[in-house]
Length: 406
Image (cartoon, rainbow, N blue to C red):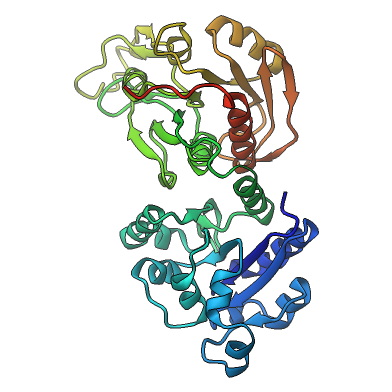
């Protein structure tokens, strides 16, 4: 798949630059020819000698080097690779890319290239969330730059946690493999993904919800979009950034989530990964319920929420060709998932055991339950699960006529 491919790796000045040594090793193991362009700031974190040793190639650093320009100029660096990858992509280099600034070798190459460009952002969480960074990311996505991550986790600074960690080399490699294996495999397709929890009001302050960070659903939406699908993500409340290239509809309650999904139809595939609350309060209080020791705890009358998975699985003219549900289970996970698939009428169920700290974690272990049987997937990051599921969806839809949009 990757044998003989040429990749230009642009390394900017972030602590995550050390991960590039592992990434280069993994790429070369798969037959990729890797050249590195290192920014001056990047040299503070990884040495040219280390990169040259691992890549087996000269490392390019200086835009005005007479030797480099006479041997392999920046235009050749820009035009020869099959893919250009910026990792880590700091807030600084993303801003320069968005503004079209070319004041060093790396940014000159990025402005001159006509090849596909990927970027793996890495920065402090507050820098990632800043409106300027988000505006730059949106602008780059509009120009076709593929963003990988960032992930949520511990920052390099002490006691810092947030979204801004560079995606791990194994997951970056998976995205690159997916890109070369099936870029555009879902072009012309439409996808709906649900993610996160729903909040069902008790009063203006309190609510009923399920545990969900939204990480898996958001990752699936991003993976489908990278394969070319026009993707709508219907998300309950999360703290996650919107996936790049995805239309996001934010909701709170299950009824609103169902309505948004129906509005997004027609679609070729629906992946319903949200942790929807099964019940809601029949009549939420208009004012905060006050604690009254004499009266005791309030009695809440619960009614059942609409079943989004069953609703979209119903055999009607607007049903997606492929409906994928999720089953967060404890105990006999696979057997429960099999029963759920039949009861809901969906095509696939992605089942996982949530009894051991899956919520909010970066990894997941799932079982894909279909009419043909059960696939037990090994433990992997949620990004990798998303890529694998997106590939399976593309396989399943191959040869199936695309859903008309009108």
